[in-house]
Length: 160
Image (cartoon, rainbow, N blue to C red; front, side, top):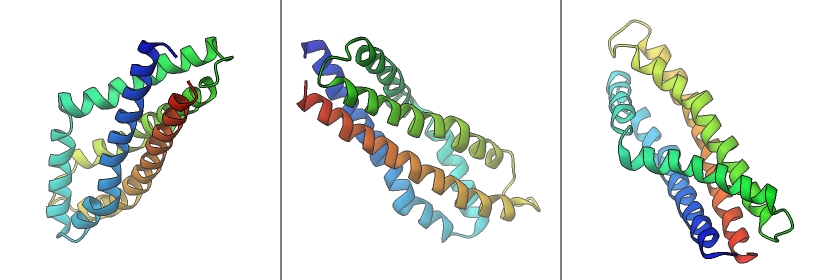
């Protein structure tokens, strides 16, 4: 494995584990804490989180990991004979499909719907309860996918 590929794989392993850890924290205790708050308070806090998460640190890691996954998948396909390739491709697919795609197609639309409701609106309680259940389920899926990607990138690194 070249130095460049080794660095890219280590970066993919670390970033996917980092993203998985962030998502794990939300599924494991942040959402539970918000659920224990009065509905309006939990809803407003999550609205604030959804705005503040759009920062260079998180978006750089999250989006950068998507681009890195694409690059590693292209490498794996064109160097399929390398022992690391199935693991690099598996890690990329796990991240892109199970983390990135779930975020874009599931979590973000729920975030947008939550952003559009006022905490004291008549429908806010129903929207918040739906959000808690479905967003957390999707978040747990993307947690598992990001951590699986980290494991697969690790195995790819060892087999490189």
